[in-house]
Length: 200
Image (cartoon, rainbow, N blue to C red; front, side, top):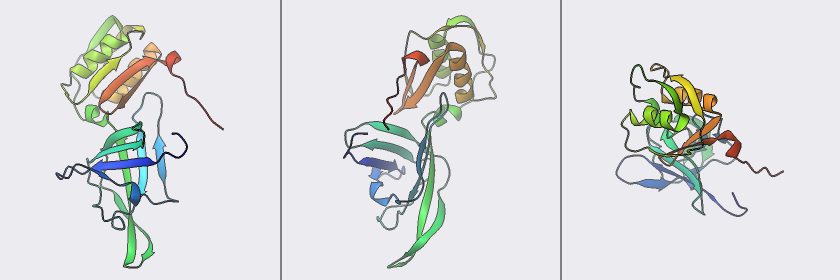
């Protein structure tokens, strides 16, 4: 994020009002954490004061988008559970409660669907296997943008009981690749092509 740019947090509570800006309701000094791990769903934890900003309490399964003024997206996903309401202090109108929200990135949609039994491949590229793994779920809201440079995997046998994320992580480990799902787009590239710029 560039200096001076403002983070923007929107939530669509699926109540017909569309995406609502919750940025003004973020509680400073409380948890605001975006956790990303290689080949695993991203997690967003944030505390909100919806009442102070005249906003509804975020609903379970609400669509969460974290970005900035320039349109860069850092996280897209869904509210995983009902937010916990925690006493945050006293205000002019009495006690104030913070909604502690936890959201999981877009692949939570894929993890909710059952994988086909007996999916196994031999001598295919990780790109082909991932397309088979994802396409077999029939979820139209997730599209794929995969690198043809992904390695060939000698053998891959999907574990139908482990879910999409766990199987994809296993596949990417075999192919030395990295996947991510942001804004409904599944991308996967060889690990060696992923560059992170660090600033001290």
